[in-house]
Amino acid sequence: MAEVLSFFDQTMSRGWVLFIRFLIFSGSAALVNFLTGQLLYGVFGLIDGTQYAISVATAFLLGMLVSYTLHRRFTFPPSGRRRREEIRVFFFVSIGGLLLTTSIAQSLFTGAAGALTTVSRHLPVQLQPETLAHLVAIGLTAFYSFFAHRDLSFRRTPTPLQTQSADTHK
Image (tube, rainbow, N blue to C red; front, top):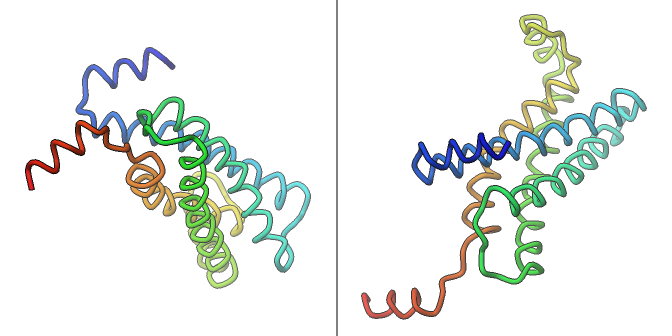
């Protein structure tokens, strides 16, 4: 993994490196999210009524823990803020993602199960409507997550020298 990350760092612009690292580690967190959901609603059968939404939310929270750990370590440079503040902002940004993921998945599953079944028939692997709804929700939420975590959760705090320099250019 270190060789792959080093290759990206040496051959691509900083913005693309950040985005690719984000995709790699968000993909890992999304896999944890997805597999946890599969375990809860697919294996344990927590699918009726609000059980499905709770399953998706629980899966998201576990994915969030993995996401913070991986992004703080491998994706974003140190923000310069206290870890407690960084975690607090990450948590609130992630809660926005949780609400977005859960509402998209629940809306698709309850309002478009027939359409999801039809789409699934054309995929290389047949997926249950709840699974496809969850995957679509995770994918759509990824865009929100990248920009929100980049610009809020891991936003770098300017050093006093940077702040002073910015003040002189006003």
